Amino acid sequence: MEYGHFDDLAREYVITRPDTPSPWINYLGSETFFTLMSNTSGGYSFYKDARMLRITRYRYNNVPTDAGGQYFYINDGGSLWTPGWMPVKAKLDSYECRHGLGYTRITGKKDGLKAEQLSFVPRGVDALVTRVQLTNESAAAKDVSLYSFIEFCLWNAQDDSTNFQRNFSTGEVEIEGSAIYHKTEYRERRNHFAVYAVNSKIDGFDTDRASFIGYYNGFGEPDVPTQNQSKNTVASGFAPIGSHCLKRNIKPGETVSFIFVLGYCENPDDQKFIAPNVINKAPAYALLNQFKTDAQFEASFAELNAYWAELLSTFEVDSGDVRVDRMAGLWNQYQCMVTFNMSRSASYYESGIGRGMGFRDSTQDLLGFVHLIPARARERILDIISR
Image (spheres, rainbow, N blue to C red):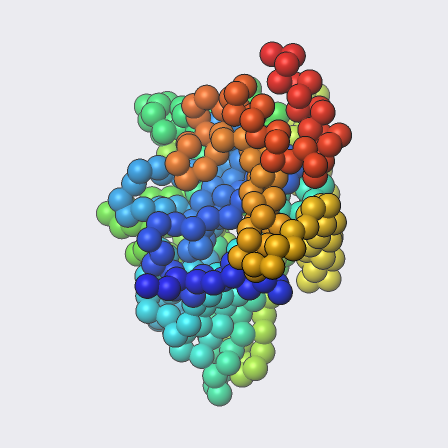
């Protein structure tokens, strides 16, 4: 059974059917903000620490597997589907996932509508940025509704998955325009918050999971996208989520574009609020202003591509065997840089709430990337031996 292939010219791995033997994931981010993204748009995001600063929720060892992620539900004339196949699992006319160097591009087509989502963590930015483009490839206009979805983690991933008596009463959000702010415990003991926004006027929103999905439904059969109407819920306790509704009439041959930003923000202790329980959103405004247009998105994506091209040009392999050259010269180096960034502390098999960055593992890992980033390798050595 063939599920994909390497595209050496594009430096991507191309997955051509979504039901892979296990979720095939990519690691997005190279500095302080990271996202794990599977070939069906599953996964989660965190800032620096996968346990203490987990931004979105993920359920390990779950049935069905890979439950939860950044989903985009499409309601096209009553037909509900997602470009990455999961979680709706509607039969697509075509599907493709391209895992590249620091980015993932998922494309699905159904009934003459093409949906492409491109996700990456920009350099110097603490956010996952995703552009969703919808193209009407049919001969008739389409009334299409797009529903975004992420589920917020209540920061401490271990406490989030065990302390339900407490967690079911602490979730808190704030909505302003097209931005949803996750501010659980911000008033009590934190100076950081998360923002999930889109660069367009919205036709509705939801922040309460039970209202969006329905108590007896799963991610694949959520109430709001199925009924094609947001409920404009404001979560107070229980499980906060972020969902935007965008309704468009798309003419034949027309493409509409939306840029979604899931970001991490901090404020100094003395600048947390601008009014009672109203958070100071200045850092969020600065973040969102960087991704208002497609031109800004494309410039940031080009910068990321240039970074990886420069970094991986340090070492090249010409063995005469394209398979050896591909793995030793590109993908193994990419994996070593991912290991440098995250150690073994976050994956689909290490939950990020256990041992974190191990002394022995991190020391061994140095051999994989010392030739790529010698200055940062030196910093890592000093950090290790200081412990």
